[in-house]
Image 1 (cartoon, rainbow, N blue to C red):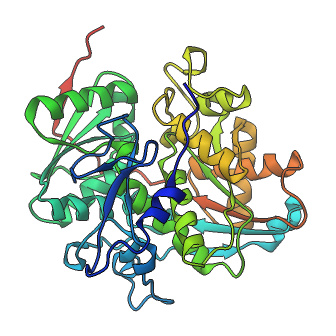
Image 2: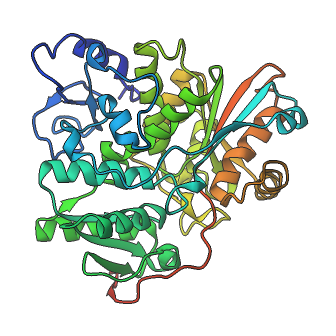
Length: 415
């Protein structure tokens, strides 16, 4: 079987000029086999199982030069999977700082360094963008009962959103060891299910629960509304930077944020806001780096030797030991853009965390520090040069000890 290839360019170009007489048309198509889908609730291709995504007519993507309000969903609506402006339920996320740190760039021996600080979002995480676009799309489709699973950030963001928007009911599944990362109060709109197992087992249980009860499975990585939400962080950064980045760094577990960045960069190139794609650099922590190990071996897929069972590490948010379903996408976008998948050691992550605090005044989480550790590693290895322009997406900050749900439904996993 040939390696997976992502076909955004082909799909986007086929859609150009196809919406004559329509205000907005969202085409759903598989980014692997290019087959279109007419089922608005699907996230995966019925033919090949590949990821579906929203494709827009770039000739009609009339994006204002400057935002007219803080509402990022209204500003970026031409490039979001919402047909009507009235369904864009903005939850206060976005407009996060993107700033240059010349002293830190000089310290590392690279040209220019820009940091996108997502820790100022409402739940201190870039995942607020997921909840905003995800819930807006669900509202447009009439979906009200949703099942999801995460290591904490996505669930916390979704729970906040569901408590702000009336009519939603969420079933949040979480592995026992990640319960402390769910930072939201009990409410009638959010039911929390704790699985006696790891992140992967919680996800499996969640999908089974959704199927058994006829609820909408949110989909994780394969929910393109997630990726479209995360894409907005990069669109904001590209708009804010005085020049184009040569390299973009982000820490990854499934890699959905980086896939969103890749699509956003292609769309921006198509409408003339970028002249080229940046090299996309995915970074994992060495203690849980199945993608980085597979990439270093030149493997096209994750095999048993790459899988990390019972993963541990500093960065809880990216502890995914088995990214079998998503690795081929991240591998391809890194190779296609001239990037790489890296693994950062724990000492290097600690060093990155300290530099972000002392040199940039940021209290980033360890996942964000992992992304910056990748910059340090790439600079040491000579991948970055003294004229490189680097953008780092710092996806969140450490949440202080906050309220966690108390009313729990517990599930045992059969051995």
